[in-house]
Image (cartoon, rainbow, N blue to C red; front, side, top):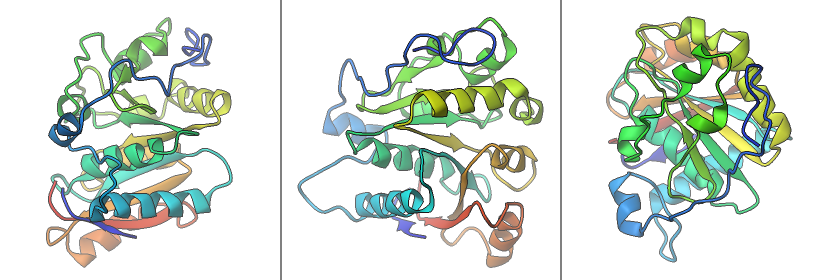
Length: 244
């Protein structure tokens, strides 16, 4: 795929939405300077190569599917910019005013999206929702300041995510949002493929998988080994990320 050059609320218990989630609203939109601080791409009248790169990947993903999708963005190894790519693929989807994007931070050991996006997630996030059968997802859905882009942060840090991601509640969470919000596209920010099983488990929940390799960091052998973990029917390709 392309190279980048930078780095309803759901119902209680079952995970099904009750009240409607507000997925396109942003109570206070970010300024261009604030988006730059948060490493978020933005629309501009001036051509920007990295923005065009993310738009091109978005177009390819949409061509692969007929409905809204769940996309897993999985880095080959730590530090190659998987979170940057996941965040900006979601942002590129939100450029389209007929669509919304939900970014889900699934890196429970080293969550970063809420920090980068400068969001106070003291109410909790994904792990808190999955641990509490009575929880309402709307309490863990945060505006990013970019219309159409929302975040579910990782929540309380955990050393292992396999049990969380293989749970029925996790599957119901994704299925219910997708079925009730046909304009919402979900992007799962995964832990690195190497060294842990979480990416493989999350791939079972996803419709498409994007592998992120650090340009000059991950060897061809490491990339091939990481790609072999995923179903070829779901595998969209490799994004080579230069800088994070």
